[in-house]
Image: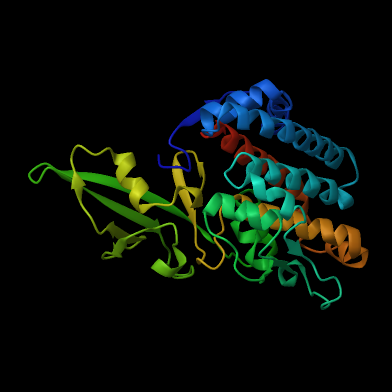
Length: 341
């Protein structure tokens, strides 16, 4: 299974995984543990790790307090503390990275919501604007290696189809707009030539949006092959010695950070463009930023949403969005894909 991280670990639990993840995050309030994890998993020197640990602990403690508050209060306003919890955690992502020195200059959100721009008809037509500077933008650069070069406006109808754990509710509330596709990745060995080749099959159905190289930015240096009835097929342009590992070959042609958490053992990728790379955390962050802004500044819209067909989507996001973000966050800290069963 190809995923964001080469190593995959499965944790068995008799509790709700979110409860376990919130407890696990408390490890990051321990400076000596943070120094250890930064040194061994993020290649940070001991002295630098100690300085960063002094900053990471307070962000984690604050994040956990906000998230606890989000689940203990009324659902209508839960997104305000939930977003601030997530915001503190994306700052931890930044503090574990080579961009950590830029955090002080990027402490504001990095996104904006214009309350009075227009009267939205429903959740799909609501918009947020992502800015080139700020915590969200710096977080984007940490994950993708690319910067947001200009203000980018995005409709929430183009955000929710990427949030895997509210997909069923979104399909009921809106017409199905699947932006995630199953990916079958195969390395084959030609014994006669002692070479390996890479083939990527992306699941496709005629009624879904077309698949092109333009909306598959996770692919690097590939060419299109003849499709099958159920998949678009791509091949790596290069062939490799039989001695090279499959993971090394895949890493040359697939951008790990754009893979979503697998369902069972099936890999999923997002259809997006290089203008805004929709790695799995980003739509969750944008959805919570938007709803926290609505809760603060637009109670009339909040009431309309509460009485609309989109409320079950929002209600589901309150739990599943936080749970998935915490899973992604803890996987980043450990630099391995963490799965629960």
